[in-house]
Structures are given as C-alpha cells and as structure tokens.
Image 1: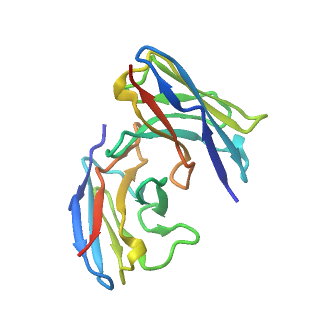
Image 2 (image 1 turned 180 degrees about the horizontal axis):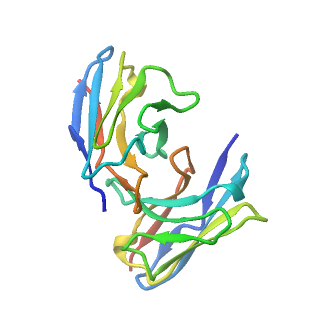
Length: 107
Length: 113
C-alpha cells in the first residue's frame, strides 16, 4: 500500500496568515492527489483534485502543487472558517490511502 | 446538485450484521465508481471499498474483505454496503463518496455489546 505522510500533524496560525501543509507519498503517484477539509462533526469537503486543480466553488485562497511524491496545500489569508483538519488522499493505486490529517488551529 | 444520503447505521452487537444504503441524485449514477470510506471516532479517514459503475468490479480493504460486500442498484440510484461479522473496530462513521469530488453526510455504525 502507498503510505501518505502529512506534516505537520498540527499547526497553529493567526487570522490573515498564510500556511502550507505538505504530503509525501511512499512511492510516485503522478498527480493523482486530492485535498479535503473536514470540520468537526461534518463530512469531508473536496478542495483540490489532480494535485493542483481547484474544485468548483472553492475559493482561490486554496492552492495545491506537486507531483510524484511531494505535494503541498497552501491556504492564504486565513479566516476563522478555515480552521479545520486537512487530509491528502492518493488515488493512483488501490487501496486508496489518506494522510493522517493536519489539524489547523487558531493561535 | 449532487446529493449522497446514507442510511442504515445504528448499534449492533459484535458478530452481527448491518446494511448501509446511499441514495444518490444530481448526477448520472451508473457512470461513476462509488466508494465507501469510514472514520472511527477521533481518527482519520480510511477507504473501505469501491464498485464500478456497472457493478462488474469491486475492491475491498484488507480489513473488511470477506466480511463486507459492496453492491449497487443503478435503477434505484442506490449504493449498498452489507456488513457481516461486525467487530468493535468497525465502529465508525461510514461515508459514501464519489471520490475525490462528493461525499455524503455519513451514517454512524457502533459495534458494541
């Protein structure tokens, strides 16, 4: 199975900050990577697919980059509603696997 | 608008069975692979199973293979997950999804005596 490792596991930031979350795959996955946002008690929400393509309706403050094994999610101009847990997911090879999550908290 | 609505969760004893359903609307259901993903309380997301649009191909995570069966009824736009021989470690919110784009709201399965 492909292991997905996110860093950091948790992150404290202030409103208005720009943050970057990284995701590393244990083997190359091309650009078959997605990013999700999840708030407590809610279903995940898709943000990014194909490593850098923004889902419809997702604000451009979210951006993704990378290919192969190393990927990043960047969030600019943090707002209170952005504080949540973020997951990466590879869909290059089955079984589909997720990162362990990055919890973004308000400083 | 795409909607995925899960149902069928609940409390079941170890060794018991449950059947989850996911009613889909807002897209051509038969054209898409469908997935089940679960999340144990306070834990991360874990992929469980998927099924081809015509039902001809299914795949399972090692942890559920032989106990869970995924199926679909394209005439009813509904996805199913038959869960047998349930274990306490199967306790989780179960989401149906069109990965990576759409997720349902989830249904909670609790396996406990």
